Length: 257
DNA sequence: ATGGCTACGATCCGTAGA
View 1 (spheres, rainbow, N blue to C red):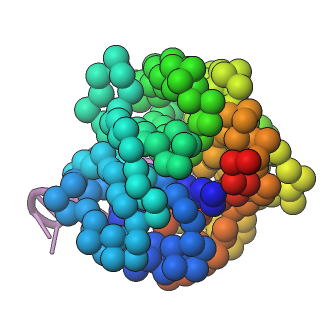
View 2 (cartoon, protein in one colour):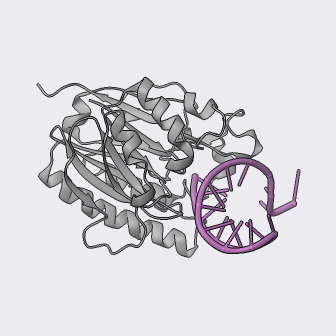
């Protein structure tokens, strides 16, 4: 199974790029974030026409997550059980025996802000939710925009970012709490080049300078991690005209034996 | 120097992202 995640930053703006990328990369499953679109305006027909079933939790203007799959999606669940939230940030579905969760973790805006407190609360709720999912599904994949750069090597300029939102110690502790559930950062299962990122600021020629952060991740349960053969970031879509500020991240899994 | 893009939904600027 080829599994991908991509924060598209408006699916209506990015639809042509998404369709092109799906045609080329041919992922079996892709988790999308920041649809910025409600269900009624989601381009379901265009995606079904190229063979993808869609499950989404949509919202006008902000947030919004989806899972697209070339095979049927079962047991779709929106949100985090027991965590009331207006913001549409989580959707889960089962595909070919794999429990897939698409997450758009809060940005947090600034350390100490209300949004930062919400981010940490949200991560705590996610952790409990994933612990429950993991108890039911040994084959669990959690993919999305985590808005956390786990380590300094995931940051283009750790000195400049020190203590800032996305890298602050409480956020990294929240990330490690997910790993403590037995989830593995698929990207770090393999030897990787230095300075690989998944997001670059639109401003200040961030992409041209490779001034980025690695904040989009595919987490895999131990059973899936053992079946993982590669994990990469595809920078190609970020080079196009009018790109998303995020690049797709991929993980390939061997078929169940 | 705390800016700089981009998208949205409201208008011709404010909010949010990261």
